[in-house]
Image 1: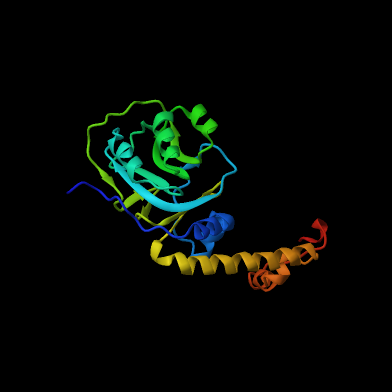
Image 2: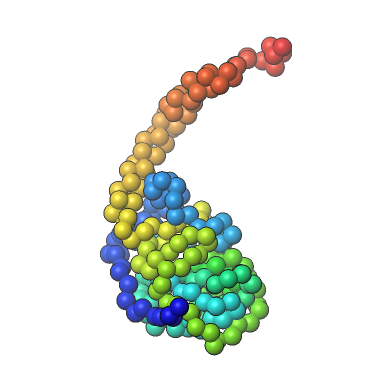
Length: 232
């Protein structure tokens, strides 16, 4: 299969990415029908970040980070680099402080890597959000080919170059580039609905009432008792 590097990808307006980041991964995931969520093994190296940007995808051979070096050149400000490895995930420190410094210089917003990172203390100090499946100092080679901006599977989820990545402490969600507008509309509507629900809670209403759960409980045959002593 031909290896390749694609230099240009579709990128939405910055305002679109900023709005998705504000809405957050959980809201977007629920709004688009509970789809696009990456595996929970991908954890933030540091917390309290909420980001969104178009995916620059990188597919590497096991234990080789040559294509990550190649990807630096094609990145633009606001991009999120999504890195994955073919085959069995034998974890290596695929990126460290020098490679991350290169991405920061290009204006990259975040890195998602379904493999290991090294120099974790320094990476935290950089302030660039990174989600990774491990922290490990195992070294890498730099002599095997792969792909930059090809379809990739990261965290058990397919990512196409230019798809939007929404990532925060709750998880990482992929918004397909063909669905950006519809996902935005659904997520905004869900957030508005949640605000109305929050107002009901503040007013003292109970979820079992405004969600209609009392009838569900009744239909299940669940009985209410005033006291423990009343149970036969």
